[in-house]
Length: 210
Image (cartoon, rainbow, N blue to C red; front, side):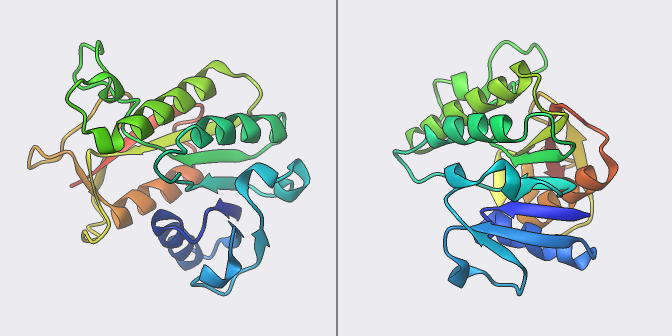
């Protein structure tokens, strides 16, 4: 596949770039600063809100690994609306590295993580805005195919690659050790598996390791 990876120099974007190349996909990195790229791949150097429809035409999939600095969480909303508008009607799989904010905390589906009063202040605004971004995606009808991939509650950059993961949809799920945990590597493998197999179009999924 021809894959555009937006924010390819971030922690998750770097691993997605590495994993996609290992699977022999043709990757183009979309970055703010190409000097931070860790791989020799074609790149487009632009802010995310400056990316155009023409920039993304011809790709089979677009991966969005965008993260905002604290205090600028509204960019999640702006970025989501921007990508919806420029990809309107294009035959491409749009995939977001999302947050856990949209996930319900139990099977009754009455409270989402973003609504939980006990959520730490440090991540509260990101959780709220990412949940809003997911709601925008769910309500629109311009995109042909999108998937919003949420990690488990514990998202471990240094965690092992187990090649063993489990998927859910709208509720927090737990692994065999009753932990809501996923490593960045397992998350990336699950993410690219979905890009290749397209088993969950136009919905959200979540991933745990083991």
